[in-house]
Image (cartoon, rainbow, N blue to C red; front, side, top):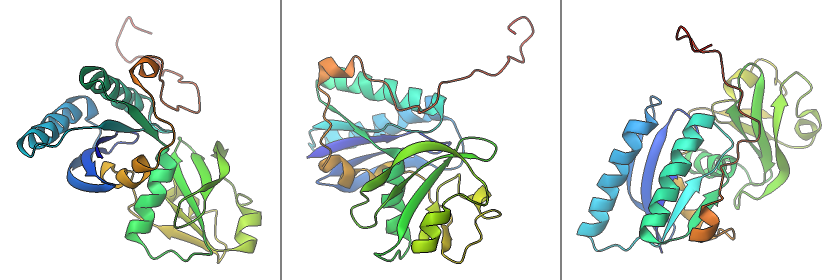
Length: 231
């Protein structure tokens, strides 16, 4: 199956075409948040390559969150538009699970470890959950967690725990147990989505796509405008 994959949950923006779970072509910018202008260009370039190679796009996989509210909105609206236009299904992908796949592709993580992806939710708060290695099966529900020195105390007493994602950096000062391991530079990327998309049970047809919303986890709270007259 040929799947167009879209990832915009952080300040990194990426898209890829995955064939039978493996990325055959990808586009990404991992250095800044310009999703609204970059994502359409990435997708046009990918679809152009698909036409040149006679690849039929069978579905769109979307990294659905949690993550940046604005980034998730851009990714979701783009994915829904493509699904409508091509009359193909949408496959929502757990962003934290995607981080686990990226981490295992980049680091040697033992089978008895616990995977703990973290996305920054400002201050000392992170979006996180717990997953088992290899199949990246979730064993603890996603939550918005305020970190302190007692976070993951029970888990760290029992086994090695690997922390990664853009929220993990601020954990280093408080999670000092010898079983706490940190993998730097791990970000959610579209090129890793194929393996999750291929075995995704949640498949939304075009009618269901109309009502689909990303997984924000927390309600969006707008900041005061800095433009005079808009406060």
